[in-house]
Length: 305
Image (cartoon, rainbow, N blue to C red; front, side):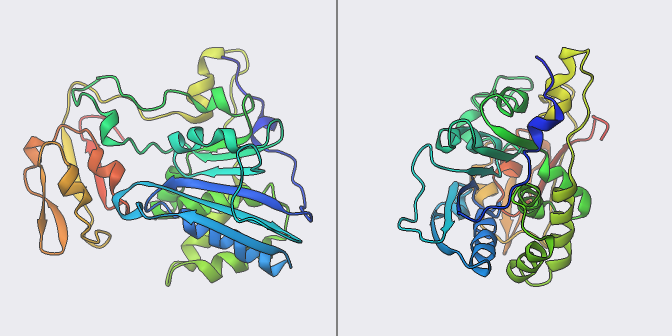
């Protein structure tokens, strides 16, 4: 497949004075509502009328979360009809694909994290190398062909900064490079809505997203396109040496990982989850994908980092 030119990742910045419809989608615990609150506050400070609608009842269970944000001189409805979203921000790859038809045909902007949170029903077999029912479309097949915008590993960027939970702010920073309002206004909003004690890390995440540029590809080698644009995690290797770690400082005791672990490796120890039977873990990563607070890390110690 032909690599995407850099222009497909960075639509020309524009200053919007007539208003926008922005749809933010993801999975519970990723910070969908934080992004929508930031956008609503920014729009209010610029004098727009703002309406916001959201669904977040499944947030604690790692379920689907989405938020409609509409701002303009006058807004009548809080919801965005199919085909009328100017921007789609996706914090999880498959959720972004599911909402693509809400973008305006030909001029909607798609900004997505390539992070995959695979639901349990997609894991039909937990054997190493077994096929998954998760969406197979790659960023190179979507960005620039079905929608303008960019796909980036926002979670990895946030992790490198020291807190994977700021991936949502990385995407907000990427949006700011397209929605050309003064960067000082964006910084003020991020500081205002960031949870207590996280203003500095969120500002750094925002700046990293704003400064992000797509990796260069070798135009002469079509075979490198998908891997270079945004590589997805490889399938598990047959030679497994699984290590499971739970950060007690981040675990809030929701017990999602304990209840959904197919091998019953985990258990509750008072208010936090612990690894009770590490030898039983097959590395399916369901616990890691579904933890709403990024407290679980699953690694194959036999594979170099």
